[in-house]
Image (tube, rainbow, N blue to C red):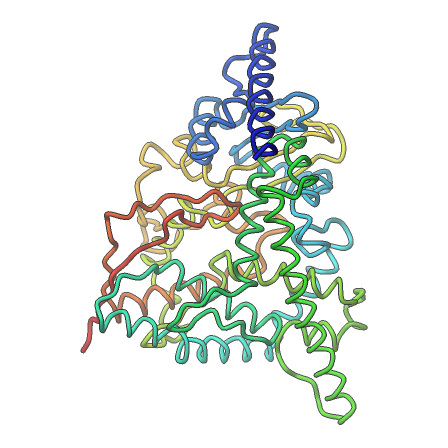
Length: 473
């Protein structure tokens, strides 16, 4: 109790100091349109909407400078010109950087955290494995099996008994199981009628939440929590211990399987990415030790689970050719991604001092945060109706798909680091949505508000509570 009281007093004192600090900066001529650290802390519970309001009033870019000990010097932007400059035309000067790696240290040296040659080599290797026909066969087989033996029994059970279910949770379980299978070859079995709590899935979600708070709290406060092993940092440490233990077991078992097959002179063609990295390590030029495999597996699992790149399949399995030309559905998916991007922020740093097209100077110690969430809500980018859900904005006068610049639609990133599975994701999402609409009626429970959770991934706070009924009996 004494420790808790001390921390409360410490935090109140810190807030008071920061408030006075910001007042002093304003008196010394700092523009009042630039928000202070206190304003940020007071709006953490609505961080995405607060950023949107501020960016709208500051013409797409603002600077946030905290006190020296907080290490919170940011340039927050949603300006497409800045995005093009940082992510493409001057790409080499804006890597993820050491600050990003420190924030996301649980991801190790995986493709999300890495820069320069390490990132290039990993991207080339991942691209090669993901394009291989064996991987595609394995992926399709995995999805079909998980649908028939995992997803469909739950959906049918809910429809039969008129149950209210959290559809977001069901989809998360499906994508997590599928991702683990095609990355590691092992099924954590999140998706079953009992809806069990699986340690690995829970640990990843806890880690993502803790990383969010690292972005909005002074560095000194994060370090204090880490030193005392309490709060979000205490939860973070426990989460990554679980992740490390589970992935270490997967890697150990996979090496044993591969070695056994090699000794028996049997061809190793499992299809999962972990097997590919172990068996093809010489051709990749990568150091495929246990740490590299752990980092790679975790990065791939998170990418496949927390974005829309993993397909969900329902009662009728639509063929790829059937969904390619569903133009209106394509527009609806783009609208959903515009307004609710899976990764609401994109983080960069400058290697050398530079000036953004918006006129804002950046330095090596300055973090550049692109608010992907806010970008989809800017009237200057999308027009006066930017808050409206209008699939028609993605369809041209000829009734064809209208392609917008990736620098104003950052849901898949842009430039050299654009998402590897973007086109495949659209095909898969179309198959999911068309099958869902064809087979079921989805009734969203209005009494449960759908609001964003505090996480680096745009989950919902209360889930998506729905009642499902069959269209065809």
